[in-house]
Amino acid sequence: MTHHTHRPSVQAVLFDLDGTLLDSFEQHWRSLVAALTDFDFEPPPVTRIRQLMGLPGPETVLTLGVPPEQAHTVWLRWVEWEGHLAHLVHPFPGVVPLLEHLRTAGYRLGIVTSRSRISLDNTPAALDLLPHIDLLVTRDDTAEGKPHPAPLLYAFQRLSLPPSQGLYVGDAPFDVEAGRRAGCLTVLATWSYPNITTPDSSGEGQERGNALFVSRYQANHTGVSTPRLLQRLSRASHLPQPDFVVASPGELAALLLGRERYL
Image (cartoon, rainbow, N blue to C red; front, side, top):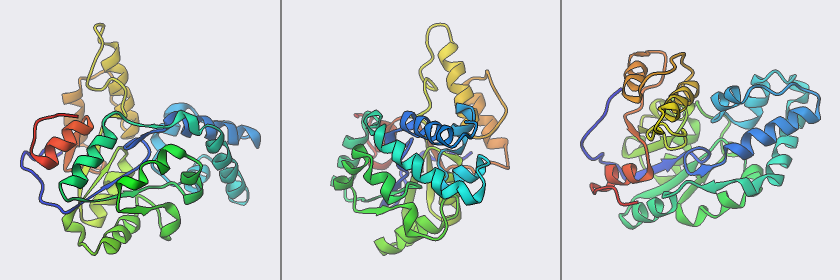
């Protein structure tokens, strides 16, 4: 993995939504489990749902074994349950100030998400972020979803910028892969991984954070320190490699604005 120390020269910063700007995993997994249960499908373990977070909803349903002829119906029920559980969603601490500072600094901002527009409209916390950005791309806007680069390429086209002038921030392997295939810089945001940078006194918090980080990156290493985990990730050629790794919105602000952490 490459860890750049210089400030990237870009004009646009695009963000994934769920797990990056919004803390929405409770809504995500609870609504998915409810929808699958409604149609008598066995829900997968929560760790499996985490691994698939970042894929568009219909693709997630198919990946979990729902027959193609039922996938759309199950997905619509999932979206319905998301609306019932929308109160569980909120921005991560520091996200809104981050967007405000970046916009003041002159960056073009956008959200490129695997959510459909109907799913986004069911989640008020997502709608509350729209005044802070210049561009929204949902799963409805392109024929292919992440990890295909089409959503990001479409975003840069709408911004009239080449991908080389942009940076994509996401929390999942699908985000990093989409960004790299599109030709922009990529940032892996780890602030949605509980306790990954702040172990408790017993060390158990760090171990839980490490295990979650690994599960999100579909690897099989547990019980190791974060630096060693990142080293293992960098040696795993089958995993998409981000250009930067940041553990908080403040770190991302420092990277882009050249300032000390202040969020």
